[in-house]
Image 1: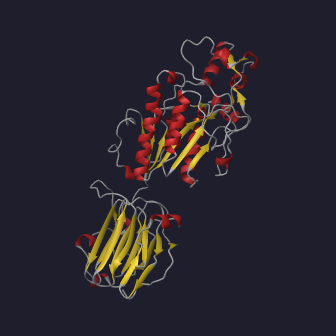
Image 2 (image 1 turned 180 degrees about the vertical axis):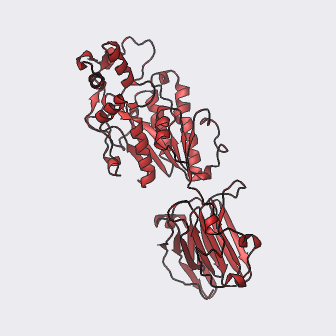
Image 3 (image 1 turned 90 degrees about the horizontal axis):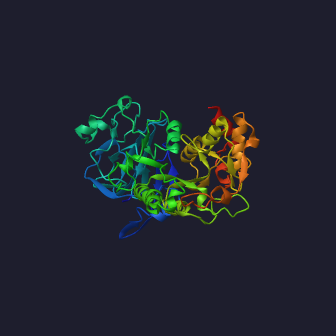
Length: 468
């Protein structure tokens, strides 16, 4: 242990490979030996290490100097350290992307450790006898896991091994690994879009068109109310986008069980899976979590005050998703996408010569599904801080009657054909229970704008939508 350096401060050192970080570890020693905190979640995550959730601890013992292993890239993250002895380590980025083939080398003794992200090839050569190499991993071994390997003698990586490979102990399997030109890169973690048959799901299909890392699941493909534990190999996924929801606002007043199953129980299942496997969960929320009594735009941190069953289920889902370490709650309002919706109904009435009475005491902004999809892609790809973000159309708020008049005008009809009525008058003759609506649904957009995302003015989006 003469090489072990005592008295270091805990410190993370960036390397030439993205995500690969070398760590200096404090080792406390005296004449009796030494002690160190080999893995300390609170201190290390505070210094920027990903909270990668290890589930298994492995030890590799090597009795001879020069024992050489690698180069192996597995589909999980590893925290690698040395308990006794000393190694020379070489790491090669075998992930798809611009840094494929990048190399980093370093000596590791008990006063150092290294965090190896998923897909970075790991190899080492022992420099002392009786070396024990330990590593924490955040997934269990599986025969279905996708590995990549690189030959230790690859000329492109050109690792400068301290002991020539001709003079050391190497397994026949490691000697047979391919050169870099023949390596199958480790693909990026996948994104799963659930609820892919709905109006937002269709917009997400368009937004991610051509991206082989994105999978889409409809209700028929994946039952969110069932046990999801074995439904996928979840460690292969980096993001779940929940575009599924029970959206029958009025029916929820009597179909309470259905609304809670679709909007709360299903979301709780996704939240559990995301938490257990370190997945980012994206969930779409609603202005219905508020009672509409505000006089200024709702910020993300306003307290919930839902009026009806639908709003209660959405608020409960938001509270559930907020417990997931990596989450984005995208709160929106007045959503317009493919299929039957308010804008298409008004355009049809205008074309058929029908003069509608439309509610004029509910105020908000339209939000088009392609903008929500664009915002979700931005949040998940930009490194925006996790949390809740309002995402609606921008521009001056308007009532439903104002929007209807706008549709009439844009389709070549007289906007004066639209008559405004109160919410009470509009629903006075309803045969079934009607959910109470928030009268004020305007959401503050400053937080998402601060991440670099610019919502489009809803009037501009409306013109484009009608033109299509």
